[in-house]
Length: 324
Image (tube, rainbow, N blue to C red):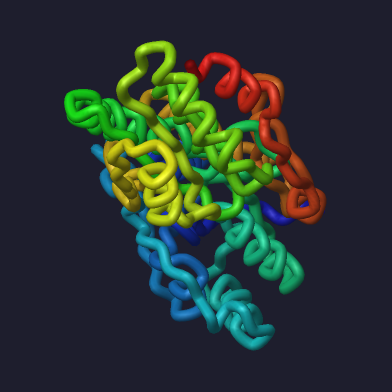
């Protein structure tokens, strides 16, 4: 007979993403609607090891849907990387009477959830990362807000760079994936987009595109570089040397993680938080909540971790075709 779920723990882990609070809010309120006690776990898996928890209620999540970051905080845990740490975390779950744990974050968070499941704890993952690089889900919480933040910053930067006829080399986040860089690049009309997925020819993909733009009376050029590629200073120096144009580096950095989540992130996070609780109560466990083909679905966590997301080649081609 399926054990009745009375308490569900909720944690956020890894890099924060706008919309995490909306997911926490939805999960808490869905628990309360179903007479389940929601327990907030502060500071991710490290907090779970040390029982850094608080029982939540409707007031706990009042007024947080529009806030960036995470009210539960987040931290990386070296202790949890060890089998002893994982055992202690599972023991905490049993001690606190947590019948399941909802883990909100990226691949690292899901690997932690899988380790917890192997200790006998029921888990459910919700994908939240601004990189949008979770293979099992077409969309991750935080991506839309990060993209809009980057676009707003670049639009403002473009005003002054246009006035001085400069080249802007702008680094956006994306250590291992270029989804954000390509999306932002299309939105701002970038001259060139440099991402870790594809090798690039500096002469063909940067210099020649700048020269073509100049021939078509374009006086300001945007080069978008994903964080994982780096070398922005070197790119700037080479552009100046080979074109004679003044080039400047701008690194948008951590402001992409912050700010009020967009409507899309709030809605998606709310749907996923609600679905995670409903599915746990329906007997599902060791799954990741995913968004695929306009539907919220489940993917077994082990299968989800094996899946890789390829870059949208069409989007990348669009960016190149309409760059001038």
